[in-house]
Each structure stands twice: as structure tokens, then as C-alpha cells.
Length: 482
Image (cartoon, rainbow, N blue to C red):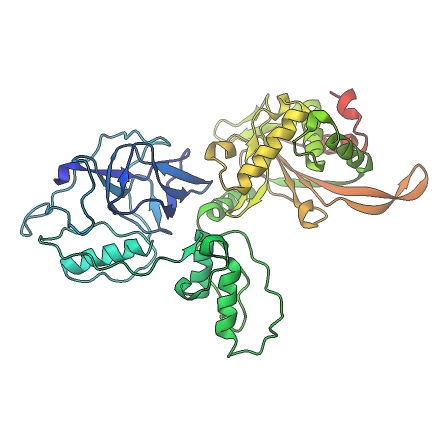
């Protein structure tokens, strides 16, 4: 094959306005045959993890970046030979593109808009890579280094031209240890070589506990820690330390700010210093709501659906918005206008392995209670699996954040950019409460509503919060106020 048959697949824009993505995992290696529509890698953007399909048939020639590299949109990430049929043997070097004395001819570029299934690339720009070892100086050494890197599962830099005859590829080393990307990152942060770790997971997969056990074994001669001391709980997000680091092993850990964590930080700074926040609180007896939750769980209409207090809290907020529609709005700074939305895309803050995200239920205002339950269940399941799409996190109008699941009474939540209100729900606890003139144990929670004081004054914010509390105290208002 000649260079004219090589197609360069560029990092696409998998969401509106995204400029970069991190390569989480490669599903192919050089020499593999790929077909149109086949997923070749998984990338993480500032909003979600997305699988990328290749838009043509061919044979993988090279992977330009290893796993863990952040690549700008529009930058080529994989080269594929699209003509000539079967894949060449891996030990054969690619054809020489040009004599050594002449400058290398660039590969023929595809049309300006490639038929990428998830979006089109933009202008090529630079990438930011993690430091890696210097490749050998010779052409043969460069080829061997690239192959070795591929066999270790870390990707490879763009292939260098090789003068034939090329040396045979050395025999493959032992099989790469099996571990998921978050576990590999944990091992890297703690300085653990996965090849030395004894796996205990299914099919020989290395788990977080295996990595921690390896660290403990290495530190045992240096510290007299009790053997039966329980391991510290792991932190789920991959862009922050996956587990507390022993004070005896390291003074500090530096974690790159990227992906969801980077996007969240930028959004929260923008929100805090753009919209003037006001937060109001109310403590409410939700005993009747908790009884209704138990009744709905037995209702055949809700069979197989997720029924919990959040469902009725969401419905209460939707009722309050219908009674006070001006709360469902946004501030247009450029036009100096308040944009009142006649629909509700209800955001639900979700803690996921990749960090905090806020997908939203489109047109939640038009859903019946069973339909809302089904949408909530799908939203939560998709978020936990890390499969939330960028479109699911766009266009929200108002948000609920349930901090009560962590045992927290309440908080002062920051607004999602472009929204005017966010409701925080605290933990529901059995507390002494004056009910019908007597002190009785009742299920009680505290709600907090933060709103943008540019377009929501104290009266409007108070009415909305009071309406939510009233519905939760007397759920029959879901019928009378509907």
C-alpha cells in the first residue's frame, strides 16, 4: 500500500462546543481489521464518556496517542489503511513514504467533513500529553518501541517512517495485566506495578482492593500497622485520588484537573461570580409523603419502577413551578432579557464514578407520575453506568440535588449555569415534632432553594419553596393543585 491509502480519523466534537477529550480505552491495536461503524475507542469529554465508531473499513496502521492522553478536537488519533484487503503481517514494516533525503509526504487527507457518527472535527490544534519515555534514536528502535508500547496497552506515538527491510517484531511479552482504567490510574498514583499485583477479581481482573493490598504488603516492613485494620474506603471519581494515601508513604498527591471535574469547576466558578445567589430554607414534616411512597410501591401501575421520596419531591417541585411559572426562567445577559421557559427540563444532580453530572428529564412537566418514575429510573441507571450522553446534560431549566443520601441535613447549592433555581433536599429523619397539639416522632426534612436574585425576588422564591413544602406535607395537594 502507499500513503495515499491511509485515512486519518480525527477526534470529533461529540457535544456542542467541546474542545478536547481524553482517550480512556483503545479497543483495537495496529494490525487489526476494522469495519465501518465499529467502535475503536472510548473517550471522556467534559460531559460524558462516549464510544467512537470508525467511519470506514480497513486495517489499523497506528494509534497516535496512548490511553490517558487528552487530545484536542480535530486532531488525528488513529491511522487506518483503507485499500488493499487483508491486514499485512504485524512484523512487516509499512512501505517507505519517500527517500530519506526528501521531506516526508503527508498522507492524503479525507474530505473536510468526515462521516463521523457522533459529530465532525474542527480545526487541528495542539495536544497535551503526559510525559513519556524518550524513544530510541534509530528507525528500527522507534518501530520496536511503538510495537512494545502497543503490546502494553498504552497506545503509541505516530509511526515513524522505516527503511526496509524491517527487522522482525520481537516476541510478545507476558499478557498485559487485566484492570479497568480507574484501577490502572489508582495503581499509577500509588506507584504500583500491576504486573506484580495478584488479581482476585473475576477472570483474573485486578481490583482496587488488590492494588491496596500490594501497597500494604510493600509498606509492611516499614511500618507496624495492625494486620486486621480495615482498608480505607475508595473515592469513586477517577479524576481525584481513588483512595486516601497513607501519610507514611507520601506527603502529597497531585491530580490533573480534567474531564468532568474540570467542567464542573469552570461552571461553578462562572455561576458563583455571575448570578447573585440567594438561599432560603424550610423544615417540613414529610410523614404523609413517606407513607404515600410505600403505598405506591404496592401499586400495580408502578410495578418495576423506581419509587422513592425523590419521585414525589420532583413532582412537588413541578407543581410549584406550574403555580409560579416565572421561577422557570433564565437571564440573557447579551439581550438584557429574562427568558421564561414554558417547559421544564428537570435536572437531577448525580454522583458518578467520573464526578458530579446533572442530566435532565426533558419535558418533565408533561409526564404523569408513572412516566416521571420511569424517567428517573432510566436517568439514574444510565448515570451509574457512565453512559449519560452530552445531549442529556444540555438544556436544563431547574435542578434538584439530593444531599440527603449522604446523611446531610441540607446545603446552599450553586445554580447550574443558565438556570434560575436549584432545590437541595436534606436527609429525612425521625424527629420530635408538634403534630395535632402533641409532640410525636415524625419524618422530617429540610429543603433549601437557591435562586438567581436578578430575576427571582424574595417573594417568588418564597412562594415556590412554600408550595413544595406544602405538597410534601399534604401529598393530596398533588391532586387538588394539579
